[in-house]
Image: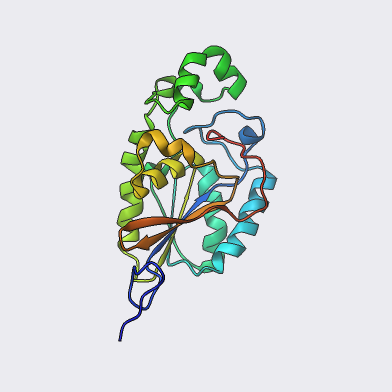
Length: 223
């Protein structure tokens, strides 16, 4: 006789899981400076955050790790790889949103120079921030990479995706089938925190969001 979990998703198992893990703190996070695809390194605090989070995530026994190829994600993912012995697969499709002229500016500078554009973005309108990517375009490049690697997992396998706040939010929105207008309803991730998606009978479900720490301010492009 086969048994199912509470959602009736998979016989005698929990199904596949995707853990979307944001990188550790950078100096631009602290300065509230928009990073986008700028390759900013972790601070000492960021490295310590990655090390601590990696110990917790290693306990979930991941089967695979993929990561953005930007330094802040590479160094974060390396901490988990060192504990698990897994090889990290890097993909530029997992990079943060390219935000053109916004990159390098603080949020106050963005509001001062691009106030109307900023307000439209916050209303959920499709905006090319600074002449950069639409949020749907970020999901178009990132979500298929995540799904491709998830499909390679064993039946109850776990994939860790080390990426960036905005990219993670748009990927979650796409995998849950939410209307892009509602992606903003997913709150931002604190540095080195993660969200967990589980495979259910009708697709992916959000099991945890911003897990891994006590509530702290969200410092980054997606705050």
